[in-house]
Image (tube, rainbow, N blue to C red; front, side, top):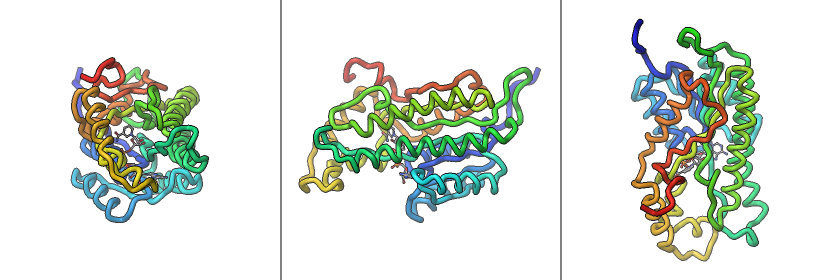
Length: 287
Ligand SMILES: NC(=O)c1ccc[n+]([C@@H]2O[C@H](COP(=O)([O-])OP(=O)(O)OC[C@H]3O[C@@H](n4cnc5c(N)ncnc54)[C@H](O)[C@@H]3O)[C@@H](O)[C@H]2O)c1
């Protein structure tokens, strides 16, 4: 009997929101674990794409960048086609494109702000899952499955949030979109299993990415056209979140979780929502 050896994740990874932040950390984790190809799908500027690509390539991994908006079906369909044209298949998809919603109370929430958040965080997940699954249904299982174990035609990990379980006042659009993400994940998991495709969600805790920086630094309202006054409430809120999480977290801690969730070794794990939050969601207190 030989022990397990070789790269953990030798297949092709396709990551929306992959140019920066958690999506890029996932891309780097796949590169570290021996992925043959990594595809970064995003709407970022050239500089951010370049930096994200370089991080992947520094591990000797081939990296394709594609500008595509996950809210536009033709663009995400094109991104999948381009990835398959380049690498032949998609083994691991991670859908991490996301935005924050408005911070207004429900009584003041504009339909446009609500809709924008659902478009990216909910519809964007649906469209990505749709076209990733179409490809995965067509392809054969990845090689290297151990004798007697079920094959894996593909794995999809969607990005939820602690807001897929919990909520806060002033977070209705984001909370609803992340609940929807888990709902899409469950339905896709049950459809996918007939094709040996697993679909799960990962819910990150609190990571100081560029997405949340404006909230923490108190400039979020400024950006959203508020009264122009910077406030310190964001810093205090973040300190409380991190205390309840136990510590500050590193982006690669989410990257590695997504890689591990994507492995054929996780064959019976389907439709789950894994909270990678240091115990935030099971903590009754703030320490
Ligand atoms: N940072 C946290 O603490 C945290 C916690 C829980 C969940 N999340 C989720 O993690 C995911 C990644 O966020 P992040 O924190 O890394 O922030 P980020 O802003 O650094 O990354 C998000 C990426 O998604 C891209 N994106 C946004 N809209 C897009 C669209 N329409 N099409 C394609 N790409 C688009 C952005 O350009 C960006 O590169 C999001 O879904 C977010 O909701 C983050």
